[in-house]
Length: 291
Image (tube, rainbow, N blue to C red; front, side, top):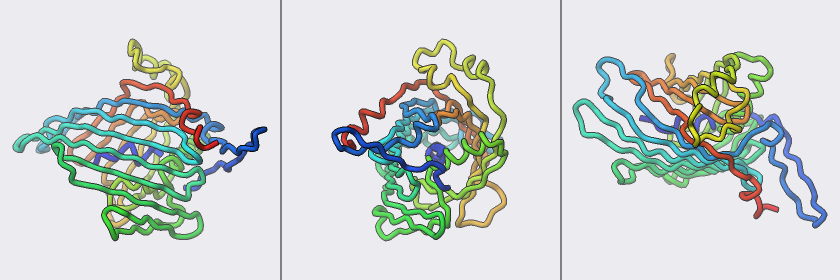
């Protein structure tokens, strides 16, 4: 199972915001964080990962685990970290525990991305992906992998990284658009960029969101007490010609970039990812060294 579904949208094209600077009386220069103007909220979140359904004939009988997500600003870039720990149980083969650590560092202007992913099966490492990518609005870019050595991927003109894609989707929603197509690269595997078709739904009523989280003291309501929309995404590999998506997802995306609920549909089973804990992150703590 591909466990990078959140990173492909974190969520997350060309950034529609300009990088600005402010000068302090001391003469130091501080980068202004673009997401602040958009109302983005740096945060730490914990999601429960569960099997939602399985089609007849599927070998999957249960999926159970969690995903930890940490997103904030760091020295002119968005920094995100994901940690998965998920148990897969099968009808006629031994259970398997997959864990992974994923991180990326995406600069504000959408041109560069540093990425790293390590995956483990039953405690033994089986995949290590690291590298650096450069994307452009007017010409092709490139992802150069340190691990595995020698691997490169061509990035089509206008390729977006995860946060830039998130911004593009949210701005499209605010402009009343219903559909958005983009090429996105997140460095989570060796497969290169993917094409994502986003279908933007109507706003979700605040009462419906708050009803889902009532009595959960681990959720900071200030982070999810705002506008949200239902977004559907379909993922297509660029290196294959196919009519059907590799997988699809439906998610509740808030205007502050928080994802409070998600369902991922594969060909023979579906997985839910439900927010169970969230708290804000103070970006001044992560940007002190940048001033």
